[in-house]
Each structure stands twice: as structure tokens, then as C-alpha cells.
Image (cartoon, rainbow, N blue to C red; front, side, top):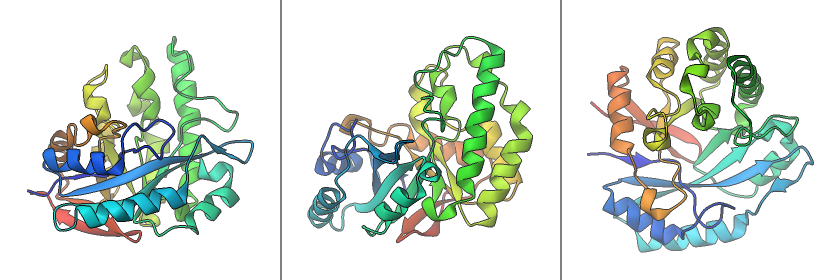
Length: 267
């Protein structure tokens, strides 16, 4: 059975805890066929990257691991590029410096510096305002398809909401349709981020309703990723992510090589 974890972080991320070799061993133990190591590179409003990311060290370790795991596990070169539209020059410089297979496009904070992790989600009005602003950022990013292959954890603010009932995703159907139209027209896709399965709401990012809407709009490019920051979490709920895609009517997942997608049947 084909299984791939397309969103993981190693010690080359500011919040990653394990080496690429340890992630790869965990992927084998979890039954993965492919593993993408997608360390963080976040642009900030200052025009400088947040945290640490040494591209040369990342590719050096990745190539050593590729040799060590040859014929047992395909290791995919990736990066999670946050807020590329905030600082396109910085993003372009990063991408020109390495041969990536996949780029995860993310928005972790708003242009004014508001981090979704730190926001106080206490009322319906505030929650909807923040999510509307988040979608506006995603739509802006979607107009720069050179900076991503798929959008990751599409409903990220939900992860940090203590009361899930404060957000009604169906109220955002129109901007989501606009976002999906932009993605589809430029040959881009979305990710099923399975970290939400073990979160407080028990649902992935995005949820089934959003996935069905993406498919209804004509979306076909989807990947599945655990968002693991520890080796122990590599492959977590990936099978559940694949099953959810089947339930939502998808018949394949995308894999990437040198930023070009190909499709693997999941039925």
C-alpha cells in the first residue's frame, strides 16, 4: 500500500527535534513509502527570516540520508515557506538556492504580525474576523503560485480555538471558492494536515466539508502530512487522512519531484 507523509520537520526547523535519519527510520516503522522533510522558512514583516534555517546544511544531511535509505524510502526535498507574499524577494532567493521537490505554502501570522497561535479566541465575532483575515492572506498568497506547490494546514486558526463552535466554516464558502479557483487555475493544491486528528477537535486541517468543496470546485492535487516535529509523530494518522480523501471522493494523492506533481491511486 502506498503511504506518504508530506509534511515533517527536522532539526533544521526552529521547532524540529530530530535528525532526518531519525525521521526516516520512523517513517519506515510507520509503513511510509515516501517522506517529505519540509523544514520551516518563515518570512517576517521585517524582511528577515524567522528562526533558523541553513539551506546548505539541510541539503547536505538530506543527501546523506537519501544514500542511507536508498531503495527503502523515497526522501522528498521540501520546505514550508511561510508568508512568502510578505517578502517575495526573500522567498525567491531561498527557492533559487536549492532543488526542492515540494514547497508547502503557509500563513502562520497576518501582515500586521498577529500570530494565530497567540490570538485570544473568545467570541464568535472575533473568531470570524480573524478567520476572514486569514483567508484574505491565503488568497493573496494564491496569486503567487511560484512560491508554493500546495497550501498546508488550510484551516490553521481552528487548531488554536478552544471552542470549535465559535467558527462556522460554511460562512466562508465564497472566499474559499475564490481561493480554490486560484489554486486550480495555476495547477496548485492543498494538504490534508493530519495533526488535527489528535488535537482538541479531532478533525484534520481542512475538514471533510472543506475537502469536498475543493473537489467540487475541480481540485485534484492533494497531499497528506502529519506536521511531525518529533520522529515519534512521523506517519501519525496518515492512513486516516488517506481514508478521509477516499470518503470525500478523491481517487488519488499527489507526489512531487522537482516541483512537478504526479498521481498515485488510492482506490
